Amino acid sequence: MRAILPNKTEFIPHAPQNEHEIFMAMRTYPDNVKVYHPHGSIDATSVFWHNKLHPNALNFAVYVDPKATEQDVLFQRVYEDIKKLAWKFDDDRMITRDYAPQHPFNQWLTTKHFRLVQTALTATVDLGGLSLNAPTASGALKTFAEVSSQDSLYQSVLERSMREYAGKPTFNPAITMPLPDWSALISHRQISTAPFALIQDDQLAAFSFLYDLGEHSVELGQMNATNAQALNELLNRQLQWLQDNYQTLAGEFGMANRLEMKIFQSLPFKDVNKYETYMRLT
Image (cartoon, rainbow, N blue to C red; front, side, top):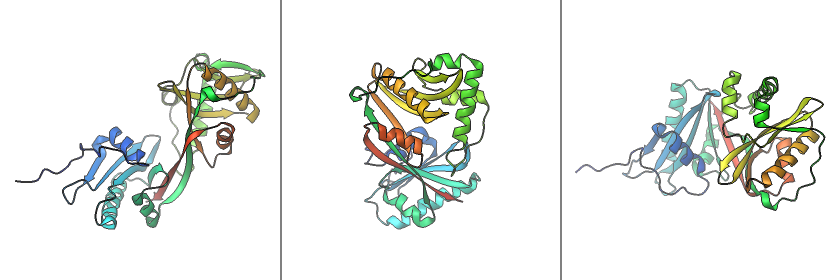
């Protein structure tokens, strides 16, 4: 009787430590999953996907069972398949991300001219435990609902946020897109009733996105300001509001971004992890 081999609908049952990217991607892109079972059981799994904002990059994630035999041979086979996909789709770069320390396959990729291009810290903080300064009031606060109902003000927010996003990351620049499309993308899960923008002298001085993650948790999104003082005031007033409405604040902070690291260092974040991105040009 012919053995029944595993297929792409069969998932590794328990996500091992520091393998988060592969499991997220397999759930999101099940049609792009490939499994390797040279000995009748799953030895490796790969998945790829594309991002419309970064159309020239092939994103991928790979999991190789640490107990699989002939690791180097398996690594090479998986990598060759990834390269073929990049050539097939005419992608000019291949990108993979995961938590540090990187698992053996991603470490092996550095011998194939992959290089570390970005390191970010992911972390959470208990909002109830924050001791905040009394809020200053050098300007007027507006919620996202108020800003999005004022065409000229909201247009300024969209233009500034898209311009900032398009410039980062430099290793994988984004394309520009129509403002209505950008609005739909960046406003998804945005908390409409939270403080969002600080207006000083009738000008947009700062804005900061806050995304509802459910279960009393909120995520800090893109921030933009004309000066550091305006952003500090806005964030402090946002935190005051969040303490009354949420329990946990999460965020991702680029280690090469001075502004993001200042914010990270100013709050008692816990559960801090490094999230590393590796890239190779094809």
